[in-house]
Length: 466
Image (cartoon, rainbow, N blue to C red; front, top):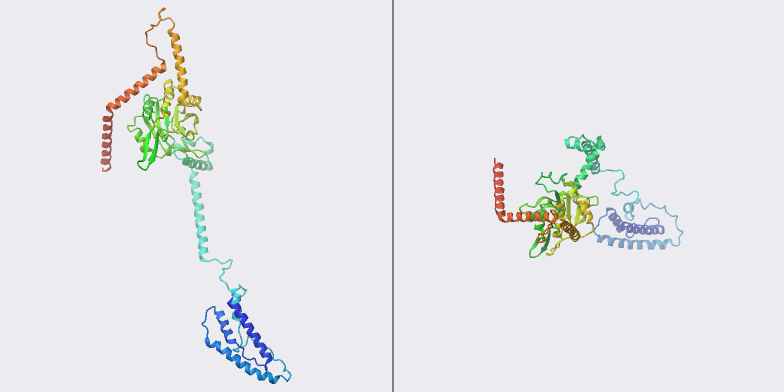
């Protein structure tokens, strides 16, 4: 903008000089403001601020006044005479007179400012490359080659032959696992399943030999089924046991191998489980989050097929049906316990579970299916009462018959019990004897166990130090 204003000022000054040259004797008179215009043009070309010259402001006025005085008599004298032929027009742009204005620098500045063809800019040519650009491209090529080599090495390693005996036994008869690409696909699939499947293929060891192994396996959740945790400012976290839990575990441990299986990690559920059965009398095994599986629906589930047990003998109790969605025929949903001290849901399942053990059911999934959609404690009580009533009627019918040649059973004889009631009494007596033994000898057993543990720790320290 400054250069444009300077150019316009110079053009005005040049037109004034031409008019005076045409009116005069042929010699161009000094133009007013020439020095100021020249200085402004030079300032625009240098693109820098120059302090204003006070003397230069006064000289143009003096030269303008003298030019007017000199031109007045010449104009008067030349008035009656004919005008002489016009002098040839001088190229003011190439003149070296102090009155001429050189606008070439201002024009160059304007062209550079407006992006003209003759101006230079800082824009980089389209095809030009800097050393940094070339270095980046070279680095990208190197890493690209290394990446391809790495991918080829990984694929080649995954396509190698089956090396271990377990791999040969597992994939030897699978036609899809043969050949280079078949082995690659099989190993990729195993990598994917290892992320979503349990950490071990068999979560429980092999069953114990008879008579130590229980005929059935009962899988129990922990949170909201056996215990309930609450938090307050005063007491922080507090965990309470569900009413009747101790009796539930102690009595049913005669029929079932009890497994506590929670979807919580060990560092959360482990300390709670230690408090439930500190002597490890009833709980056979404990499983945590790493033993769970991620189903196709995205839920964390308990896959009972990994338990290394016959599923026809496995029952799972949980408060969430999605926990056993892979084997719903083996599961029973129990109402959550929120801390009610009068709750009887857990204890109410004991008659149903003990009847399976007493009758020796071959497949536990059949009775579970028969109670589907029903409240098991209530419905089982009705069915059990009906069964006992039918047994009582059969017993009375037999008593009405003659015994030993026409003699009938005496009226004062005690009524006979059904087979189910007799078996139930036998198991209850065994439970009471076990409880009595632990009341009398529990402290001595715990003290002996603690001494053995300390002795083992001491031996471990001695062996560590040689």
